[in-house]
Length: 477
Image 1 (cartoon, rainbow, N blue to C red):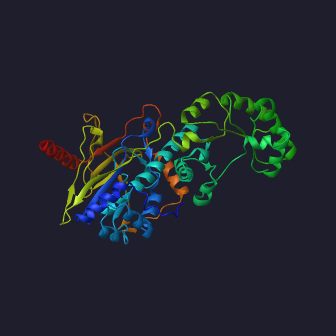
Image 2 (cartoon, rainbow, N blue to C red; image 1 turned 90 degrees about the vertical axis):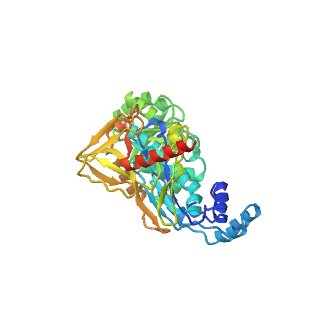
């Protein structure tokens, strides 16, 4: 799946615009585009960036085949010289991006493209597809993992994912967000995410008795004997037969899984039965349409659970399944290389874009906690010895003054002049980085209900540029 050429995975208007730029002599004009999102899923306090590795693979392999060009010629709407130009098409521009696993917030550029207009416009669909999908799943996974409060969470959603890539890349994103393993074997092969699993109810049904099914499994897998105990009756037969099979087989690593019923009640009863039978180390795993809210509820009820398997509500982000990242023009260069800021205006204030080629800084207090993000013009120089005055972007009368702080630029160079200059970390390193970065957010930002809105402010220079553009467009209307 990773080796498929996805050049033609684009919206058709990207090709018609590219043809227009070529015919009108605008093909080589330099354009700047930002990827950002407007709303955090599930009303959360932050999202998690993911999908950059797939963007890099796509950009590296960007090319049109003769079959692609023949298909476009048959559409009857493309200039022949443009089609010839596509034979040598490849990405020659620059890309800057926030590393995967970074907490991100609405309105700030998480990826910036500087490239000739055709190239910059053309990559829009795949870039958004990769970042939107994996950022959505990583964000949902992080919520679920935090709700589990230190208990392991396995991603179990392949059979409910939207397609093959939705399963394998969804598992990758879920691991970045904090899941410990996946049921998706191909994600173990391709990304090194530990594959785990127990058994289906059908395994139990294939034997003449539940006990025989459990005993056979324990003998086959004595170091990973997790038995599904609710095929018939969890407490009357399932747990007792599991205990008997553990004793008779000598299985060394034991567990049971519950996939239905009153989870809080069943796990408390099962825990007592296992402990009284001399198996206090036997793990209890639960599944069955879980999400962060259900997990928090059953933990609050005193459920005795060591690990969770979470499927459809994670792999589809069922409660809020659209991330909503967008790809907008922020600037262009004139013939002399001067950057000309561009703005999109809307009657909906939330859809007004931030113009210009920008940088994003995260501000950390003296304790290393993230306190705000600041978006600046690309060439601004910030002095950490001077206080910073920040305004709430939605309620501008609210402000905070920051002193004794450090700054970190969030975006890193990924491509320069078409060459990749960034080495993607392993997914294990990204997962560790994500956990470290989330830990720098205040508890008030991390909480599920009514999280504090994290400040994302514009520098005074950038705000002045935006205001002038708004005033100019207002006068023109």
